[in-house]
Amino acid sequence: MEQAPGGPAPRDPQGPHDPHDPRDGRRATPVCYRHPGRQTGIRCTRCERPICPECMVSASVGFQCPDCVRSGSGTGHAPGANRPRTVAGGTVTADPRLVTKVIVGLCVAAYVVQKVVGDQFTERFEMLGLAWVPDLGSLQGVAEGQWYRLLTAMFLHASVMHIGFNMLSLWWIGGPLEAALGRARYIALYFVSGLAGSALSYLLAAQNQPSLGASGAIFGLFGATAILMRRLNYDMRPVIALLVINLIFTFTWAGIAWQAHVGGLAGGLVVGYAMVHAPRERRALVQYGACAVVLAAVLVIVLVRTAQLT
Image (tube, helix red, strand yellow):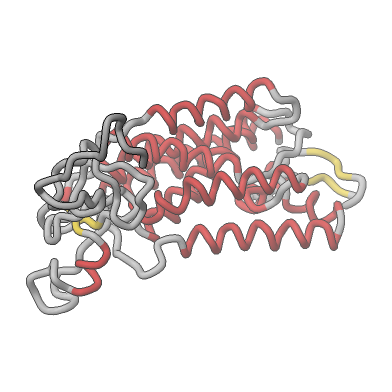
C-alpha cells in the first residue's frame, strides 16, 4: 500500500485493521473467512464470522460456520441431538464436493471407455429416439424400449473439448450448490434435471438424431443456483450473465442439442425453487414432491413420444 503525498499516513487510533476480523466494522462489505475473495453479508450466529453460501450451515436460528458445526458449539445439545443443516435442510458433511467429484470421475471414466471400446459403445448408450444403427445391425433407441439411454447419455461426451467444458462448468457451479443443498438433494436435482433434458430432446429432436453430454443436468444446476442466489439476496448478475452466454451458444452453435439444455434448465428451476423455498415444517415433502412431479412429466413425455414413433 502506498502512502499518501505529504508525509506518512496518520496512525489509526483503533489499532491495525484486520479485514477478516468480524469485530472490525470498518470494512464496507465483509468477505468469507474461509474464502477471502468472496463478499458476503451473512455471518455465523455463534462466532459472527462472515460466511459465504458454500460455508453457511442452516441452524435452528440463522446460519453457522463449519468450524462451529464441527466443534458442536452451535447445537446447544449433545452431539447428534440437533444436527445443523444446510440451507435446503440437507445433512452437513465433511466433504461438501464429494458427489460432484464422483460425477466428474464417472464422466471421465465413461469417456475413456468410449475411446478404448470405440463407436459401438457410444452408439449403444447415447440418446437416440429411433433409428437403424449399421454398426449394431438393428433398430436402436428409446422407442425400442431402451429407456436407459435417457440416463446413460448424461455421462457420455463427443470430444475432449466437450467433456472439458462440461466438467469445468460442473466443478465451478456444482460444488457450491452441493454444499448448499446437501448430497441427497443435490443428487436428486442433478439427475432429475438431466432426465428432463433427455426427455425434451426425445420429444422435439429428430428421431434419428443422437445426442449426448452432461449439459442438460448442468443447465439444471445453473437454474437452481440462480434461485439460491436470489433467495440469499446475492448479486445475480454473474450467474445470469454466464447463463445467457451459454444459452447464446446453445442456439447459435451448430451441433448442440438445445432441447436438452432447455429441458434441463426448466427442470432445475422447478426443483431448485422447491429445494430453496420449501417451508421448514414440510421441507422434505415439498422438495421430493417437486422431483416426483418433474419425473412424472418426463414419463408422460416419453410415453407420448414413444406412441408417436411406434
